[in-house]
Length: 215
Image 1 (cartoon, rainbow, N blue to C red):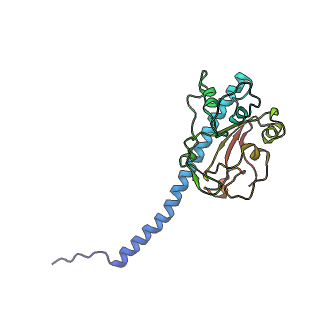
Image 2: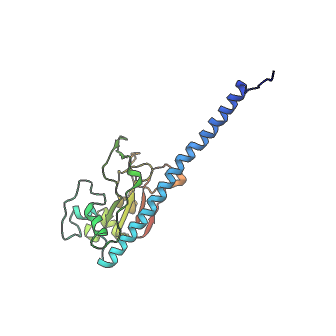
Image 3: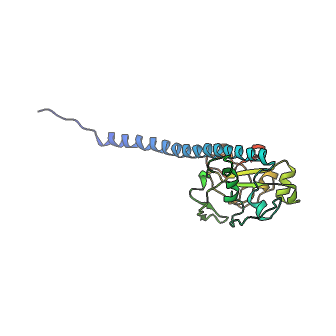
């Protein structure tokens, strides 16, 4: 009679252990690859929007007004009713880039707002808007953060919440270097992957290009 030799329990346990080790290495790398892909997508989409904004500015001698400019009626002759979220790229602002001249066919969304954004207390606030935040700056804002950003040469800026999905804080404060508070759920720094693929910080782009500040 022929004898059929099978795997021993020890051999099976060794194989299972090897598979577990490989999975422990591969899964985090896979998740980080997803984050890196979203960061690349966000930067590419922001470049596309920046091109559209600059094309609009060439034709009309100004960037399409941001929501804060319209909400406060600063530098804007006409008024449009805006939603409470005065930092988001409002529908009116988007329409200026898509009609009647199609500087863009559609406005891409912030890929990191698909699951909401944490509040100051760390709770997640699920939002039904996913557009990049868009702001414009001008001398007419006076000496507040929007006016100070203009004095530094900024005329408009786009913000992606980044992998940590933190919305708290303001874009002009980040641009002019206002010292942030100690609250871990507020951000006024730019995203830097060298601090970790998933680290706090916004991805910012302005009329000066991609924005970075010391961490």
